[in-house]
Length: 334
Image (cartoon, rainbow, N blue to C red):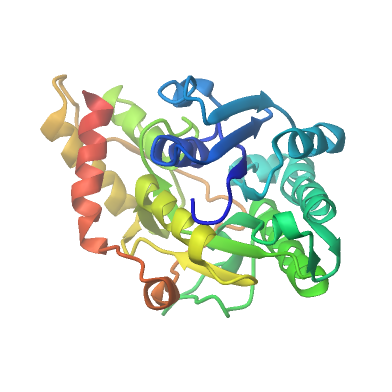
């Protein structure tokens, strides 16, 4: 890593956090990665098997809301960087139980910010010399912008979240920004489009689609199936997060878009064709079960990533989506 040598990764046993650790820990032997995760239903330490014995990686089961334990980690390992992947992230669950989303996504983030400020800074805009390069990076989502009919959101678009999940993430982003503006804390925020990749939690859309097709079950689809999402591979998202953490400007946010917008039905049909192509098992005809639409269901997400290209020289070509997605489906069924 460029500036930070003891990086706290929160939620590192989750889908995106684990991919980030698997990509970065082996490549940065001079950097220590300390992973804390509450190990909720969406966490899985099996995602981290290939790095668990590396000398620059450590794991602790800790809730980001637990002030005493997080402070202990900061003190013991002299934390000088933090990337906050920890979050409740399933929209359906947020509709059923918004309280847990506020606890983790808002209160948990605030706890991490307070501890970072106390540990790194003497007073507002006055860093302790040994932590002059310390940085707090917040992982966010394109869902904070809400739905858009035409065009794309950029980093200056207003937040307009629809669900308790996206509202909790929007709230956390604003609190992160306030710590930058009020206290001078070195912060960056990344907002990514929908991720796909291996070992994603089974409740998410693409794993549900794959499982349904393989087991010849009807795929549950909200509404008319024409809701549009932008997709990026989790590997490419993690590379962008690393770029922002190391080179982003303090106080700035950066969109990470895949540039691959697909209606849910189109994504289902693409997934079905690829599974039929690569599966050794017999795959029945596609079955879709249209169900009542989700409350507050956004119609279309679309973000503009030109800032990441222009300011940080992001090296990404959205044309690799087909190759990445095809490889992902092949690995999923073989």
